Image 1 (cartoon, rainbow, N blue to C red):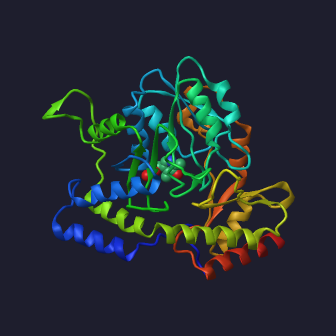
Image 2: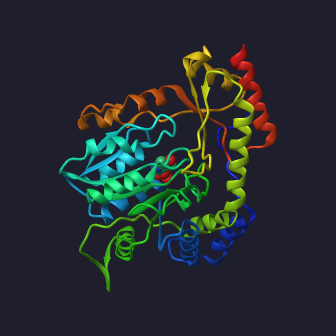
Image 3: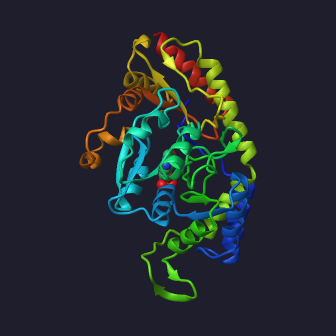
Length: 367
Ligand SMILES: *Cc1c(COP(=O)(O)O)cnc(C)c1O
């Protein structure tokens, strides 16, 4: 059997809406599905505004620019995340400052933020990892006390909650991705959410080349073409209509993996803190010395048996493109990155595939 690490499910409604978008000729960024998708997504997250953009990466970049973050400004972000977070800071001309993560949730450790703040710090970018929320209250408290903006990266947590509130509704702005392996997909795509009317106006202006209000082809700011298409929004709207079912499948997957793998000594399974729900975007596992086999040997043997996995992120501070930003002391991030990987976690994963993954896992570690 072959089990891919991610296989999406495209719903019937999504296919029908895309066909409709094509039939009506609204293939670019004008057309009714953009508004419908933005309105539905805003309602789903519980925010006043949702602004579609071309990706999660551009959602982060546009957020920073709309908030006026630029040259010389410092943005605090976790060491353990995708490069998009750092790239967005670099595109804006700002400086990334890395902090270490919590060893259980793999999210930014709030206790380390204060020490990273300087007179140049303007924002904190908490990143919810693999389906689990950051501990947001201490982060929001520091931000308020020190007058910092909060850019929440919610690309991996569509539908997850922090203390009963949706992730993506907690920061000054939040960024979502709709890449093919995300819980809601538009193929490629992204969204910025905010409650602030003025920030939303600025986001809409900047994503469409910053034509001056009331004067088309006149530009007082440098804008971008970060417009999502009506076809992509149609796909997203169709997927979003089934979000409860999709999240239910993720819940089932997480519970099944935990049930079937919890007897294995020497691996660390995902946690769910009391303050968070877990939407299991990816089911992450870590290998400890007790297992007696390295992460790389384990994943190679799983692959030999047709079980596809992905290693965890490589820390940002260790990236060649980050070497100008000083040495970062992030031992937890380094350890988690070196020992972690995730199992097949796509929305198309069947019971048969999941059972096979768990059987092969048992065989490999007991061999
Ligand atoms: C996927 C992801 C992104 C980037 O999204 P793209 O749509 O691929 O640009 C950003 N942040 C996190 C945490 C992600 O997982």
